[in-house]
Amino acid sequence: MRKLASIQQIAEIRPIEGADAIEAVRINDWWCVAKKGEFTLNALCVYHEIDSLLPIGGVYDFLAARGTRKSELEDGTIVEGYRLRTIRLKGQLSQGLALPISILPEEFADTYFIGHDITANLGIFKYELPMNASLRGTARGNFPSFARKSDQERCQNIRREVWDAYVAEDVFQVTVKLDGSSMTTFKIGEVLAEQYGTEPRFGVCSRNLELKETEGNAFWDVARRDGFENKFGLLDLMDTVVQGELISPTIQGNFEGVNRPDFYVYNIFDIKEQNWVEPNTARFLAEGNGFKYVPVLYEQITLKDLFPEATQDTIIQQLLDYADGPSAFGGKLREGAVFKRVDGKFSFKAISNNYLLKSKD
Image 1 (cartoon, one colour):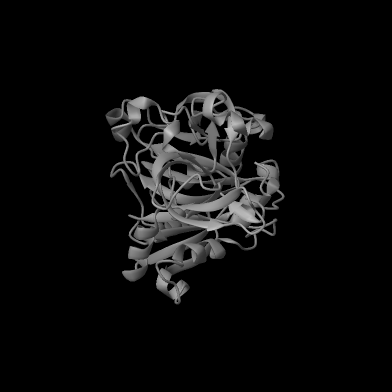
Image 2 (tube, helix red, strand yellow; image 1 turned 90 degrees about the vertical axis):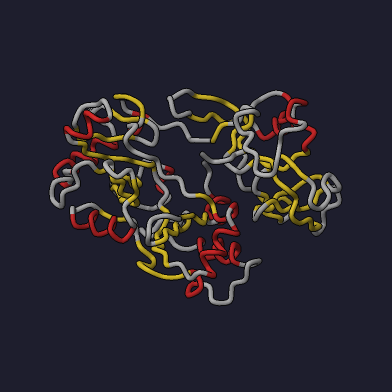
């Protein structure tokens, strides 16, 4: 699970030109704006990542002037709060919110440590745009227990791991991160279905729920239109989960600039082994079964080959610069890039700051 709020350390402080009351502070590889003098170098803070939905009331009400947003939780519940998104203040990119440790309840006084996840303690949720009617559908049940959701860490949070991969010359598959809605489809046979206490079936899921097949649901419409159930049999994809992005003219303001709904695979999960399939094999299986695969920028490349002049201090910024770029489908611009080590055991994403600044949701 993503740490939306955690205990972190101020790694760097720098002035903002033309600003008397604010300055920029760096937490991991995130820069955000704070009150001038509020922090000293290496001080601990409570860092809130972008996409956090902060609760109304108490320490966060200074954000009230920006208004509130509604978010949809995994169970479909709608909550309201203050959303943190990427902004610019006095020309400074600001991503997240750093507040003093003093905002924490007294019971935290002797228990917190750097990296401590306090998301739940502070009543913070991840912002998820509520689904429109064509995506929501009717829930058949929760997301299947035999499957797994994919959620790559952002590169800003794992500089050390990224640099280790750079030095080791690990090989990655690099793909475009598409801007749509997460979709999962699967087929489970009798033996494994019995093991997991469910029934054998072909199924379709939104980001959080398995869906009943209903007329007008965008996920099922694409699955039936393109014969997904039959595709699972072409190269023996039984007992497999296929995950990807549904992009459409009616999703996310059609940031990708497409003229019809389409599903692009980015992960395949082996139910029996409970493992992600290696990315190059996943592409082979997907395309061999007639699925579309997310646009591939590099099938195999090292970070050192991609960024030959990088240092430990510059690698994250170079990744973020690389994340900027054109849409794969002639849309506004791409959301970013995903890096998957070819052994399938390490991955991360670099999200374009241009995308974050221009995206309305």
